Image 1 (tube, chains in turn blue, purple):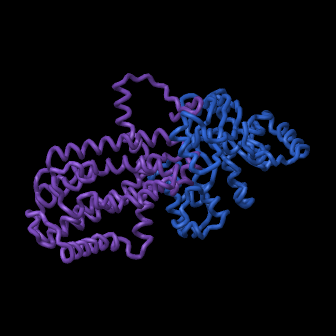
Image 2: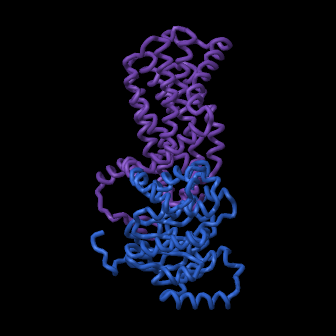
Image 3: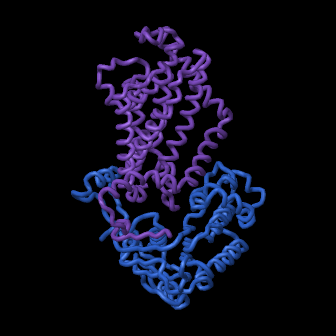
Length: 260
Length: 288
């Protein structure tokens, strides 16, 4: 990085919208691809409707919201896994997504082999991985299980291994999606400490249902509802408003239905 | 510095290129991507090969024995029960006919492996594509490289067989790369196309299961063909099989026209496949 002034925008989003296409029948996908220019065969389901967001270098942002409000989709769009349907997005810097921890794990292979694959997927070179292997193993702290097939791991051990890999990616923007919920308290503290250290040099985007974590780690909180930003600002203020809304507004049974 | 710029669902690359530069970039792009992702390709390929060769008790044993058994069965079936007219320069000898079939089979199996697997490829790796930043166009490259390794094993068996039976190899065997590079490019293009289509509909996979055995008889694997019948060249595999036999069995240069046809089908399929995949790759992520 040439200049790392605090005012530099690393994620710039304007009117970001993402519609998933819901199909009545399976075969309609093909029709859409072949004849999409003529008529559309799907119902759009707007997960993200209109997101305006500027993330500055060095910020750490906590994202709140109910299930299905579009938090994870927003992170996926920012990471570039899926394209937004409309709006503008500009991301500057190397992103490390900690979205679905262990998604790349092959259950048949040992922890060691999975580190090599998982690391490569995150853009680490083989030589870097070999050099950092001891450090990754130490962070994961799963001892002799490292040589066992991942299918014998508990959920917590998988999470440990996956986070340990992510912690060794040299990223400028770290995107974490409820990744730490599974680990035990001691491991969560270790991850939190690591994220704390990361924040000094990098930018953090963080989804969590634990308000304590958000309060502790974030400089700004964003509350997303129905694909729009409902509130943004000081974490404690946003959290209070969010809690009040959770208590007042009932769980909406129509939340996941498609429509305009 | 990596930077993503997206406006209304289109990735914008801020560049102003004239026509020739754009053509050049289009032609270079698959190779630039492969080079950029080489570490990842190696890591996944290493895992796939290990799964293939260590997951089963026999490992390499099967890879070597399977082609040998195939040679034996085909030779037996076609020389004792069926009396096929054999080309004169094959000598009519059983072993010569076995070599004739096997050299066709090596090429055809390479194709069959790709054709069966490619439609399922995106489903197989769906968890990578959906949850991580994964270059999905490299999956076809990895699958092709894996099939190349199997083919190389068969090819080595074939060369050893030739060496033992004939006591030597024709010098034209050195030209093997000029068949295998275009063949690999051809199959890679095919894999890109098939895995994009296969991501949308499982029918592509079922279609291949039905088509591939038929194609085996539409290709000159078991029979020498009459070179005046041009229709057989509509099946692009014909060219590859023929060039392969020319340089390995008959020790002569391939017919320049046939070789030109090989190069044309190879380049066209390669670039069409990449273009097609690239066009639909962002849609594919949401379908899986």
